[in-house]
Image 1 (tube, rainbow, N blue to C red):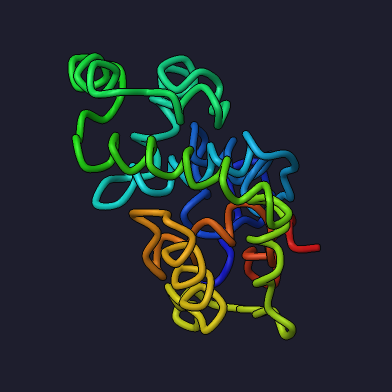
Image 2 (cartoon, rainbow, N blue to C red):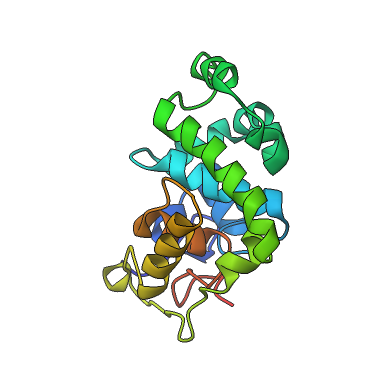
Length: 189
């Protein structure tokens, strides 16, 4: 599919054609660069929690995730122990998946350790594609790239979990490592 024209007359990526949380996310966040360790850790964590679920589910639960994970402060989450994992398993406002919760704690610890090598933000950005895609139609889009595979492998070597190539590709799109918007979408730079 090519970009669709919403009822407001604005061309957007097809998944964001109608009003609501997804369109708001598309129009204001998706594909925008973020900065700072907690912003990167948040996006990495939420992409992992999204695996197997709809992104709108995660967006609707994002305020609770931010509260439960202390604003994605790496040191605070890295200090979580088994009792914190159990507490989060009882929190109905977030996705209660033990493997994903434990991965969030593991990734916070790995984020703190990565500071010695320049930090999570610079590490992720070092995998930006030299030749970013410029898709005109959703049929052209991919769910992984050589860069997302390399980022996944690099993060795993650094002790991160739940960072597969597809999840890392979604992360790279979400945080604007490259412009993910279709040619013709009003958000395409």
